[in-house]
Length: 401
Image (cartoon, rainbow, N blue to C red):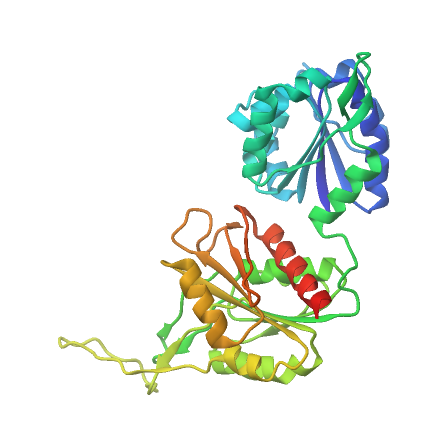
């Protein structure tokens, strides 16, 4: 997995070299970006030697022998699209302010705006700067956006003062990086079946009924579960996505095909997550020939498709069954009703009219509805982060049994 380590100015910058080594022990591919202030405390050569990569220090090349070009001008975009995490450690107060207010005046702050990867900051600064209302307001803004914050430790600071502001321990930061990226083995030994994508119901050889699902949420769940050591069976309707390496991919097209695939494999599972957007209706009769255009209105008779989630919940035994509810109004009311009607253990609901939570987005805003009455509302997060939160909740349900 690829991460960027952003190093900002401050005495704690030297600790970033140790952090690089610790992250490499987790088999992470680390790219270092340094601000100008960081270079006053530690040289780019140190990080280049540790990572074997060019350390990025400027938005554009400052070397006359290597003038700025189109490639260097869009480098932040290229990096933003291929990383799994942006980690800033140490994160100085001014960089937190830039992130919070959308100021993009160097490579690191521009990368923050350009990436859709998870973001983590580990602040380090003088205790008075840490406690200042401006710093705390900036942190509150970032937390509300889903940025992960590794709070500083308390102790003797380089400035001679004592209090909060010392960069968190390398091990603490590395452990939280692993948590966010899902580099855990807490699902080892478990088999998880996940459905994803839409299903298609034919009207004739040319046309079909379907929906706007891209499959991104289901595939993110599969990726997260694989990372955490599970044996994953991914039953997928038609999508343009690549199945995560290590998952058993079972392609299907119609709701009936998905039903058969799920029923054939459910017995071997510990958890079933029905993230697919299954077509609720199909044509009562399908034409063997293309339906020709005419001048009169055409009426289609539709019939319900099999209710895979309800069927599975009735015979779930000791396995967990988790459903999804894409709603456009009365989210809690509809999700609770669906949870009771289907008989599943958890319902993951989102309002698809919300910006950042609809179909074919890279983010999601969901609420987890549990049978014991609890509701867990999540902020807007990447779909991979949402996937990890769902798996966390599933593990908690297993432990409570």
